[in-house]
Amino acid sequence: MTSRLYNKYVNEVVPALKAKHNYPNVHQVPKMEKIVVNMGVSAALEKGALEDAAKDLTSITGRKPAISRSRKAIANFKLRKDQPIGCRVTLRRDAMYEFFDRLVAVTLPRIRDFRGLSPRKFDGRGNYTFGIADQSIFPEIELEKVKRQQGMDITIVTSATSDAQALDLLKQMGFPFAEK
Image (cartoon, rainbow, N blue to C red):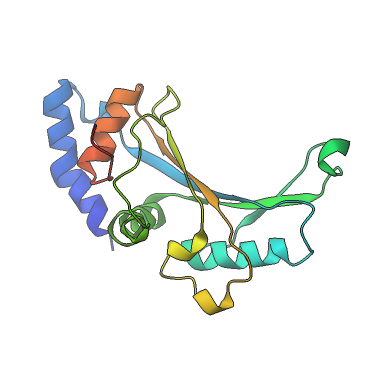
């Protein structure tokens, strides 16, 4: 079963973007390729911090996170080689569209004094990355079980060749950008 947002993309967004940018082929229309959710955990925290972050990320995304490890030792950061420093989940296809739909419709409006996200956070290649300071804005997180506040970075990877095309794509999909 396809998600509601994927049907919107196929039936509304693709024809609108194709007409606006004069794409001769439907395969040139930009699309979302994947969403990466990353939680960095300080290596100096207690031992259970990484497990708590992985458990929260599992409940948020519905997927088991991969544990990120340090590549080399850095003495100033009290970091050893192969020490676990975070966890990440990569979402594609139906899981990506379901997560994006929940993010836009439910999670982002729960941020206090939310007026939209900045449209200047593109990387130059059509990918958009933003940070969330606290995981408790997700409705899947039970507030009484949260031991520490944990932030996360969310990257939306698109097939767009420029930031303007990616901005048009995300606006058409309903992503809440702040107005100037």
